[in-house]
Image (tube, rainbow, N blue to C red):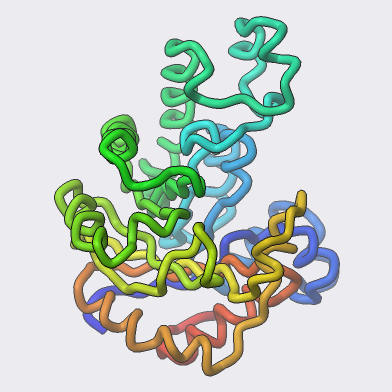
Length: 303
């Protein structure tokens, strides 16, 4: 493999991993100890919590201090910035105080329903919170996972370009959740669009047969980074309307299923400087175990 391949999971703090996974050693009970142990086993992690609540500079500094110099964090973009319904309680308190009572009374808020100045301030604070990680050389990419209703269109492509412009200092990776982007008639257009912007297309392994399903296509659309995320293959779990993401991604990959991606990851690594492989099946120890198994198949040196 020409480029470097990093493998990890999409969370190190999922409650089912902490309480039921039997992966952390006895006595590893603090946030500091868990991250230090995780970082001793894997070179990469995706921070999922920043999707639900925006990141803070304080946490970025703590993550830097608790991990080796060459450790990499991928950050999932705050839901407000990816056009998902966002918990009203997650908005910065001082910004929320500027909103009308009828907006604050709702459980969820949307970016396009908020004043422009509030949205611009959220962008600024999101950037500022990640700058310590970037300055320390530990920020891999900011993952923009767009919602199922984010279909291929001129307006949505313009918004992707806006996201990249607003985070011009960082690497932005794009994951789609609507089949229109990768339908046969649109694949060339979609991948060409990302190539022109030099934005990595996030390759996915996920249940098939839904409007939100993307094919398991391995494609590199930037020369510096490729990314693969594993969401499981259980269609029943994918349909689950659960408050906890781990239930939706509850899937233990078989060795044969993981092996399908070995030639694909090798192909990607031959086209880019770095390939990130993330197991998002973060139920109990499924993700950490599958990551280790796939890492062994790829001959990666994992602790």
